[in-house]
Amino acid sequence: MVTLNCKCERLLIVGATGELGYATLKAFSSSPFWKEQKVYATYFHHPPTTDKHLPSAAVWSFLDFNDHESIRKLLSDVSPSSVICCSVPSHQGASSQSSIFLRQGIVENVVALAEASKMIGARFIAISTDQVFDGKLINGRYKEDDPINPTNPYASYKAEMEEQLLNLGGDILICRTSLILTLNPPGKAVRFILDAFEPENNIALFTDELRNMSFSEDLGSALCELAVPGHPARGLLHLCSDEPVSRYDLALKLAPHFNKDPTKLKAASSASSKQYRPLNLSLDNSKAKSLLKTEIRGVSKRLSSQLT
Image (cartoon, rainbow, N blue to C red):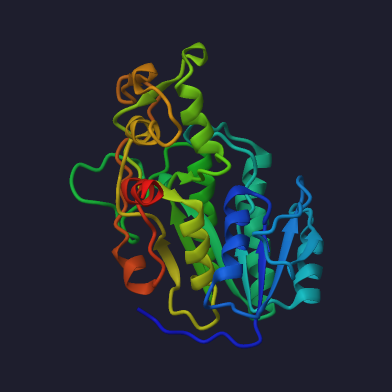
């Protein structure tokens, strides 16, 4: 566990209107590590809206992430102490197809932001995925230094991003997350689960794909903590809960929260689907636990706290 002081620092959150970026910006307001500090945030598709939960002093900038000159100019103008990159292009995860657009958003743009951050001496945090592993794990859990073997274009681009960032060196942290959950309002993953309760959508939920699903508000708080200048975390970090669950199990746990009928759910086996998706992506998050004061709760604990 680390105890840090943050004085006269500036935090830049790139992609702050997305699900994770928005949660990170909200977490800034209550972060004990960033009290009375300055936060800057960028948007592209979705202009910021008035939200009482967001920092009133947040300074917003439009940023076309594909324009690397604009990236360099923004960092030169803002001169942040730390940069968190939450920007992500539209994708379908394990079902994604290869595309120039997807690679540019995941690899080229993130590396350009990291290079610009390094030039001004800013700490840089990028977001990766558990899908860099192939999911063929039999026992135990994947650790940060285990060999990766991505099985889909989205994961391959994330693996390429990781490699380039690690080669770049410096004050860089790459956080591998899993499926990100947001309850209110429901985020992308939770909306998919809610759709599965409606028979007319004909959605089957896999029972055999295990992932350390985590909630956006916990991840946002953890990212704010990790972004503090001087934090010792470097390289790769599994930033997730310690509870692997399947989407089917997630739906069963969410049913009472959203007043849904679990008998409406349709179960399926990913292994039998011939889609060749990663099955067991259980991550070892012991390194993150040793470095963080923020608790990243699993589905069971998070929903239990909601009910009480």
